[in-house]
Length: 158
Image (cartoon, rainbow, N blue to C red):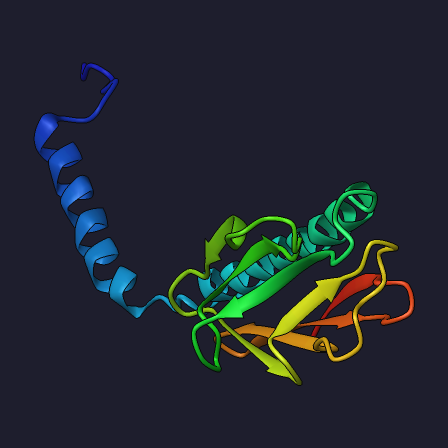
């Protein structure tokens, strides 16, 4: 009588692992990283929306001491590589930068109009501020729009 076989030999396991490794080595370079860039675009757009709302909240919060408001200024040249948040308070002798942010590689931001978004003490956008920002990466775009009268910020994906 023959004894029933209960497992696999070490050689059989090594052959299977080698075949799986070879298949992975062939498949990985062929993967499209578009999904990664689209996720980066979404993350950058929502981070920008959050920081715009933060800039508006700071302008409202410090209305009694800062009559000029707060500004989110896009840095670099178009397409922009990042932005900074700064106070427009005229009482301080030097420019007060509160935060800097640089977009990840592959993510770009373009603007229709000026690259400066200044929120006045009541939270509304100062006339002459930009109206729309487009954040994109690998074909995915997010459009950030403003309501000048209230300073409200919204983001939609395309």
